[in-house]
Length: 291
Image (cartoon, rainbow, N blue to C red):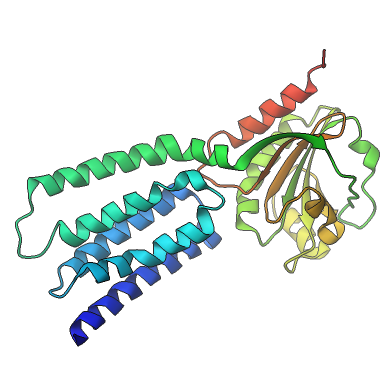
């Protein structure tokens, strides 16, 4: 009995360590859901292979091994990206193949090897062909509603002139220096700005929040340390961020010439397909004369 409990605890501890590593990767390395799929699949297969070879490995241990990562994914990722639910069966399949497919002392059946190949092919198709589009569909939202009145400031604290935005197509990207997805998104926002650097009818701004420990000095230091051409402004009290209905970061809105929100999204993932192209297409559509 004690051996079974110990085996179950080891399985749960291993699964918990994987879940912590996954969260750390998302927060500090990359939130690319394709890499998360690879990390979970490879480690669960390896842990399943190791744990499944133990004499007292049982179904309870298998469940405890998978539970932490699946729980974290369901709580943190699926509410924002519900289309990525296939991560779950693919992870379970990887763990299952390691746990029961390669038990020590048994000759590996050809069917098991075939299952590994099939799982690898399905996972590759899912990661390369399905995940990018699914993320775009989950994050992007077309709207048509009046934009709230906002007051922005330059980094030095002086007011940002509202007439620079009036009558133009405006792209606002809400940002914080402590937000890893915000930083990962910036090169694409900067590329969008550079595309319209000579256009008088398009304004692209990065809107920084003085929250989470950010200060004007910290934001200026961040800007000075990077080669971004896109202008940074301040959203005092995060009032504009809240006025657009955002609860997290990053958040992006595209506003038309009549001051109506036409496109809105919250979040960014490196696995997404065509983020920059999508925003540019929307801006180009709004620049066209309306018949």
